[in-house]
Length: 174
Image (tube, rainbow, N blue to C red; front, top):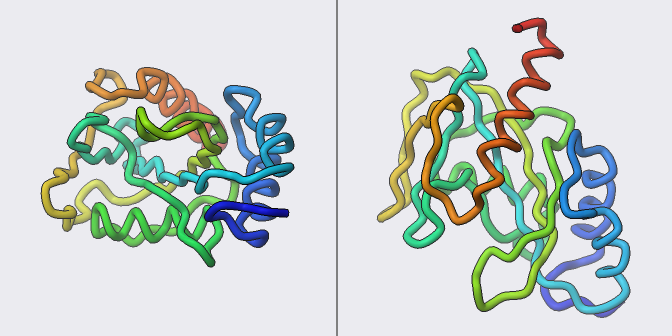
């Protein structure tokens, strides 16, 4: 398999996580199966970090994407889960254990000049008192799920809300 910047270990991990994701958007699994046949763009990975009440999520303010979950490109030699964990630390300073089930899988373009690629979203729950160490020029903040935020990905709010509700059902918080 010829790939641009995605190694076989990362692709296999992405396939596994995509199949286990709580939610699938954009026919992502079908897209991934077709994309594996040729060169692939680097994978994307992000973390939906919730407070213990599942009422807020951690977002970073990207210079042109607006408020988005911490995340980025999966680097050579790492799985999407490893990339998500690394990006979380780099962008927020938070070290959190990702929940076992990937939250979502989607297909999107992370830059207007780039083609679409697979993005995996993972989830974590942390204490709201946790301190942030933001990346230079990229503020970090808790955003309430019952309010909106400006983002180039308008579907994120409803997807993240749905996942918070799914988590609440699993732990008996209604």
